[in-house]
Length: 221
View (tube, rainbow, N blue to C red):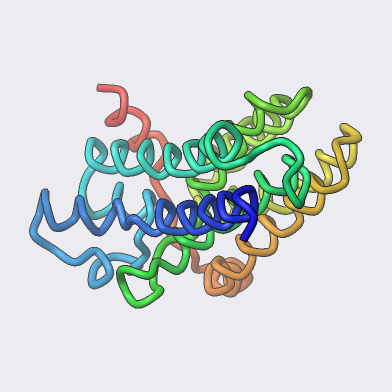
């Protein structure tokens, strides 16, 4: 098999394994000796880590989940991709980002039960902002949109779902490459799949809320 194809396959496999590292589960075991899947929402993501493990540990989990997404894309570009490979560089980076988020959502290490992929997706988007011209405006827009929804409502899932839906819209508005727009549509779809129960609770108006005033005052103490 061609060396370039082998590196592409290794990059995709590595991205999935990197995404599969269950950071919230690990920190639940280290800090409180608990399986986070049995507490709170049962989700292995930063939101549940903030609720159950506390703001300090939650912030670490959030940062590491973001790092997973960013690292996967950057390593895909600078380690695993070679010029003249079977597919374009942008497409390869998109594939690695998707497999990383999929690994976080359905980790191989814990029976394919993981998080919802928002922090890891953000990490991938930040890496794209470093690599692709004008993509920084996607990241700035999404973070701003997420905050202006979360701060007044206190509902993480609402902010995440709306921001995810707006991702491909922003990409199309900025006239980004077609494979990037397609990637963001897939990223949005993954978010919708993982938030399906949250969406039902939102429609029933009984979704869990954070007290944002209390949350931010404690976070920055």
